[in-house]
Amino acid sequence: QVQLQESGPGLVKPSQTLSLTCTVSGGSISSGSYYWSWIRQPAGKGLEWIGRIYTNGSTKYNPSLKSRVTISLDTSKNQLSLKLSSVTAADTAVYYCARDLVDIPMDVWGKGTTVTVSS
Amino acid sequence: DIQMTQSPSSLSASVGAKVTITCQASQDISYYLNWYQQKPGKAPELLIYDASNLETGVPSRFSGSGSGTDFTFTISSLQPEDIATYYCQHYDNLPYTFGQGTKLEIK
Image 1 (cartoon, each protein chain N blue to C red):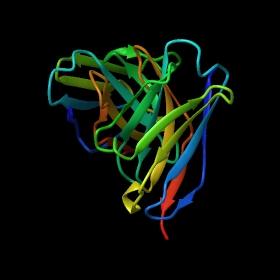
Image 2: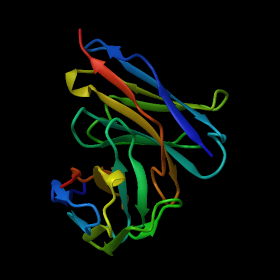
Image 3: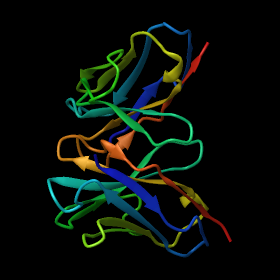
Image 4: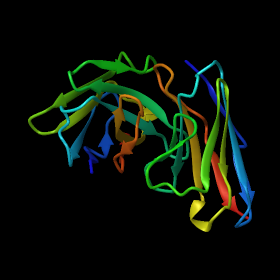
């Protein structure tokens, strides 16, 4: 079955760009009618959907983050990536990637990776 | 954005008790609703999709109902391993949004 694993720097300085990767195993990231989403969760708080990408590369972002977010696919590595620019302490969170089936969003999640924004 | 309001925000119940959580959407979302379970330090796990469909492998003591704006999540007989925070999430349109969560504890 498909598994997802997030990775990236655990510490990012304010005003810099946060860059994370999600590696997909057990299936091809570019096959089937899948979307791939990023979600985040500040410590002790609720969940926020960041955005998603379809297997053809088309993207949709949360308007609250749209000006700072880029999600992309690397089909050669079976990975998706997240870039969030101009970060502040408010971007400190656990970041998750998840698979979206066409009719059941976010049915499989990665374990998450913690990112702290601090100088 | 569609606002999802869950209640209660926390709940304490005895093992074997029936537990009910409600989720209200700020507008009609038909049946486009997921319920997730999140244990401490873990990722959310999908339990219910399309408001009432049980995800494969999820115990039958979990159930969901509702459509439109009002939804209910039920655990028919609470087990110790059910201690977690539960979230509803709509997918009627983008952006997806989540309820604020219900933290469930054993009494």
